[in-house]
Length: 204
Image (tube, rainbow, N blue to C red):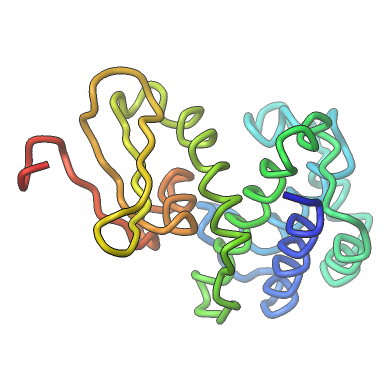
């Protein structure tokens, strides 16, 4: 995948951020749209702020400083004006920029699906890239919580693709398009159009 797909998704994220007020709620619990824009800015521009994205106690006031520096509209404008490279992911180019793509895609859904904002239908390039990315993301996020996790992408004529992403014999199969699997893997189960089946149920 080229960086073009990553950059296109950043533009879509900026589109949905511009469509809502800074105080608009998102699918990230406790975060409004302004919080989300600040988070993305720190990921892109402040590698030392990356730990705070995982553990809020390590933020050390970085998010507040970004909020004070620029109003919401200006912050989104600055995000839009730059390429989608994320400073905290220097090796992402060796993986086709899919880590950054996934970050932008999920956060786009955090706003768009929360507020019913329409989006372009995903093309095959996006689906293919997200299918590769979700296998990595689900392995990292569900290694302990969901052993024997299988992701399944449906296909015509009974085909499709399947991937065992966590260790152990297959126990849980989550089926959906890569866009929906991304939402599910990142904890947005309430908006993810997937089917979750325990192996042994319904003939699986």
